[in-house]
Image (tube, rainbow, N blue to C red; front, side, top):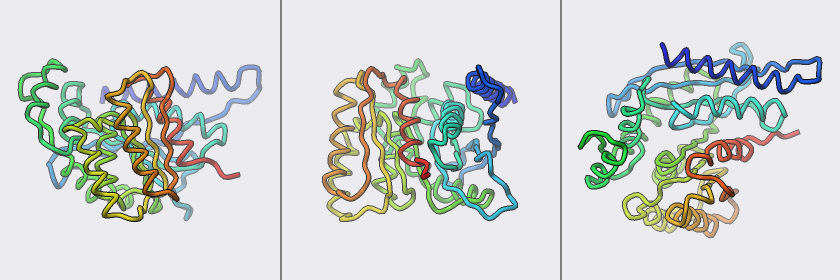
Length: 296
């Protein structure tokens, strides 16, 4: 309950900032608060409990027949409040159309457990050496981190989370997936192993260096086997200050897609003066404007 109250407080603060800023010197205060829901589900594949924070369009009504696309966002513990603020601002300026946000994360996890959970869920292969190295890096006990749970997490999204959201809310078949860092690695893994599950893929500072750039190897095989791609939009980004180890595989991954799928909207961007963490708001905003640009 403490985390829920904190999240509500943060969102209320964001609302107050928005209304004060936008009403300064004016007589009008613009209400931008959206309806929020929280659900807890248990995976049928790894028995973990996942928290789903749902953000509905402000005009969402259960009684009408209108349906909305859905953007699934990884690392919901941190991404939910950020996406709430960014989506509200862009919506206020009528820069984006309506859609539903579903932020996914482990159930109310403190930071150490959150890292353990995401490290397992987002990594496609089990690398024991990486487990010990990263455990030491994050000052966790030896053996705390275990990689290689991406398949179970992907199955959870496909068979547990998406059907639940589709049953609870008025959704269309248009789905997007956003991830950053290891989450971006997972989005790439999803694209190359379940290319029809989502229509929009946003990979931001993706950890494509994982297991000796295995995503690049997987991509090479993928484009040979798939002459067409059912995705409707792909966004790939990184921060310019992240260095060659991050930027080079991101650029190579994007260029390979562009070379093989010429008719597919593929946007790649290196954000100037941004680090691995500071790039997240910029990448989030650009993802929304790329996927959900408002049609006047």
